Image 1 (cartoon, rainbow, N blue to C red):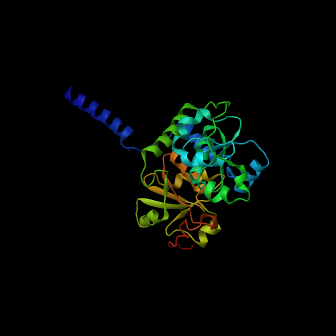
Image 2: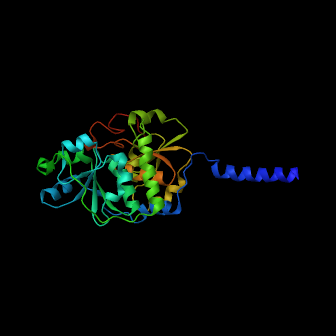
Image 3: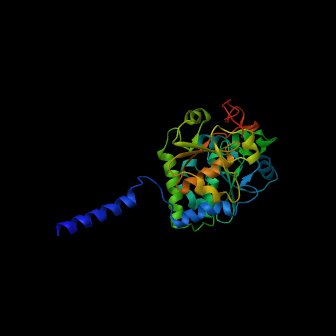
Length: 298
């Protein structure tokens, strides 16, 4: 009898450890996994981005756009594109009911990088969302006549047709943004600076993933980085990525790596985005190469 009880106890313990043995490892529900992987299955040619010049021109032409400004409240109230409504970036998850199911949502942040994460999450939920490329600082504010489309103060959210979001998907998105609020440190926005990232070059617990074009990767990339071309169908290669390591994802400027990081995190990967990516002209002195860190070629 004691033997039988001991065996039963062992079986129960094995089952418990099988369920929790991975500690904090996140396992996406089927709805969340399908939505996250589906993001790149039907990925649009515009990359869920609107060119900063085209965005300003739309407003200059008098078009009424649903603009969600996710910058800090102080900066939003001081100056924002005409008609924009506001939710601080880390509170987007608990404000999904304020967003329209039947309009394109244009997301505006400072540089386009946190907007990139937001765009992925909103599209997985079922919204039609696009990021304003390079955000307010290096995008909108660099356009001729942009002052004409700006206003101060704040705008109330209009009445909208709400979206019926899958319960598991909504829970995952709310948890994503709550995680941002809980992680106020170096990676509080799932973004790491080039200075901080270079310290992990020889760390076996970290991998660097370039999502730039193959030819650009071969010309120059972060030493030891692996490569996966960004865009439609890239989810087919996600299975090659480790779930037991931190993945530092980088693109050219941080726009598309933001989208990629959000999708990978929904799927249970510990992914963070390299601030300003490899670096381009519009990122100024930010970005891996722009800051003078070492690269190698293939």
